[in-house]
Amino acid sequence: MSNVHRRFRKETELQFLVTAQELQFELTKFVMREKNIPKKWRLIIGQPLIAKVDELLDNLNYANTIFPTNISEYEMRSKYQTLAVCNCWQLHNKIVRMIECVQSVKIENLEKIAELLTNAEVLIKKWKKTDKERFKKLLADGGDKPESE
Image (cartoon, rainbow, N blue to C red; front, side):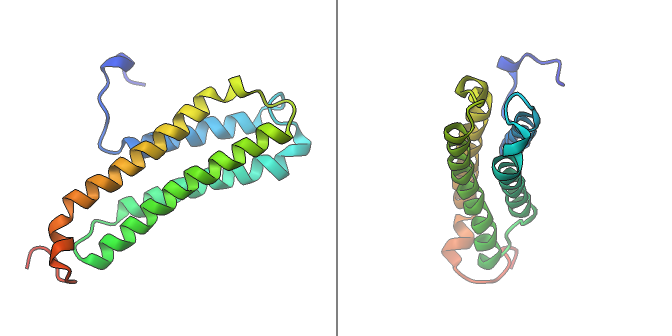
């Protein structure tokens, strides 16, 4: 961990990815604790939660590996960013179901996860908006030619 106090840390360029990874770790640890999710609920509730947060990270990584040089690459990157935002909403719904179905789940134990999920969604939307601005020229050209031509 960094020796810089949290309040002095600046947001990294890939903060959306860092936050999503932290969400993945926290959610996985939460689901695997017996006092939070009893074993009888892990297959039905826990496994889909972990699979969905893994899908969120997959979509972010896919989007991040594409640096658009033409409109189709931009659209593909944007598609994965949109899927990542959808994953955030799906996670939210699965967490609500977990709270409603599993008596041992306490809302106060989910505060950090809820904060990370909200932050991840905001950061992904911010990244998508930044991309739209960054690739405005590419979008305005509307062609499939690389920018350097």
